[in-house]
Length: 382
Image (tube, rainbow, N blue to C red):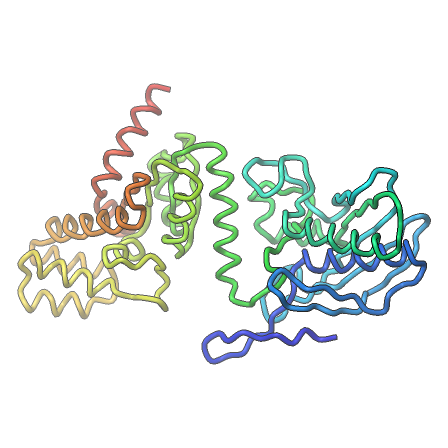
């Protein structure tokens, strides 16, 4: 029963899949049906929160003692998902207490840090999948006329091994994979999955502090470590190219102060209002250096050299030759601060530090200077 829904990515048609949460809900449906009717269903079907119908044949559905066990194989479509092809297994038994009780078994992770969708100690089965699982099991229970409740135990064979290749250990989910999904559907765009992961890390960070370092990549992380700022106890979250989304999420979570630390090749784009810094969206580094150099009095020859420069370091070399580096960097930093203030609406203090692997630190925006001075004072007095 192939899942035939597609999205367009550039010139390609990519097949969608369905989440581990959808698989878990389907498996719970099948196990509950076998337990309460005595007949193993040949097909399982539900409508996802996105409104798309998913119909699958169970990988197996059988009785094991007093429990009915049903498995559904994960289909991630064309998304490069580590869970693709795994079995999501639901084991269902009767319970004396009313309602549907849901827990995780082997291969399903446990939450060990605050700030995630579920509390510490709970199985890493997120809110929407829990609701989907409960709805499917309860619908079968009602149709069968069964009194009492049901217990649903989810497991993922090989889930613990696969989880080591995911973000789960870093996020504080130990012992297995998460059962996830808000729409029930996997759309093979992968960017949304990255943003969701960033949001999880930011939620964890907010549970510890209202202060935050954001770093686009490993260069930023290394810079913070070299400065010793990773020892201040302020959370550090890597946000990749999603600077705008990270700031928006930080704002919604109630962070009060944020400092972005990154290579100038990424952060200089903020001066032009570009908050998704991947080069396929905008590669305006030379243009920004050229525009601000012109504002600072650069001649046509310098502007042409800047436009021809392939890297930020090459731009800096041109500015040094013209004697304009301090003025241009100051102009760019003012523009970056202006864009950050507009993005956050003044609801949090956000600043930026720019550096180059060749030239070292290039400068800090006004807010970054103020916030870092406050943090350094607080750390020295602690």
